[in-house]
Length: 297
Length: 127
Image (cartoon, rainbow over all chains, first blue to last red):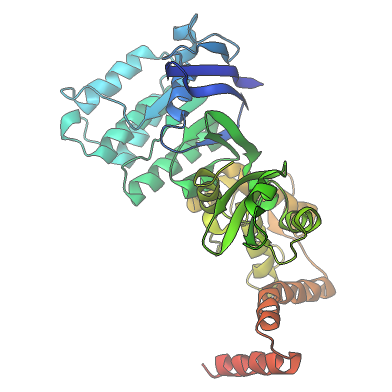
């Protein structure tokens, strides 16, 4: 069942400078999608469009089969949302913020709210403005989870949190996932968090979707090739290969990312470039991200 | 259970879990009939997606390493002693493959490399 269907989304904030330029994203129920991209790659814009907080200039958005602009209440009732820049009313107490959400959502789970408040060590009488960044984010997560949403949209939820607070945030999301099979779409610059939580990775680059693969595919069927600089034009020859996602020229070698198993990438380089001493290997997400984001295409 | 994962190692997390379960069986730490932690417990402890753990468990079950009976926890299957022996050998092979590659790149003759391996085994035994 499709939970989120974004099709051919275009959006720019300045004429001629697209932030999203024909983006497609389909998310099925129960999937956990990690959204990657550099700062300014359009992750937040995409999440805001899915939430109905922002209009796309072209393309269609469906959430649970509904249009978030035409039926904002029906859609938002079924979504939990946490973002790095979320602003909670500073003068309210934790208790008041939770109370507000409890009244807004008929599906509010009292028991879960009590469990999470206890787990996070949140004092009901504390004013929001006195909370640390981590505690404020925990209040936001509690409010996002306790109405048992079918879709959780997390926009850089771990931004600015220390390692332990991040891990707790992650564990709480994982619990929600195993309890109710919530669909999760989250953006994060912490790539090891993405590797822990996501089963699918979507990378936005140059306003488009550059990668949309399962995390296991990325680990096993993608590779980084180190090709020694010899014949001039190595990087152009690599870029001409359709399986090459990007190259980065370093002092001693050209680094190229391939959507191929390392053995196949090496075979292709030998066949097309006549280079026999390329080294190809699989890599973690962080290395792959740096090679792609820092390279050219 | 002694399972740790390093999500940024480049090896898929489900494979890391599978490898370690197999290793613990080959080393005798896990014996036939021993229970494995439920998917949600292990996923919460490791801080990884529960689907990843169930994928690892399902593949181990398919390989006959684990056994699932309705309504019971997942347990280590009873392997024949020759199967266990093969598994031990396979584990050692896979751990040595990196050392073999390094020995070749450093131009060690097989005899020299084996000597180093033997020396290191002896030193470890004295500890």
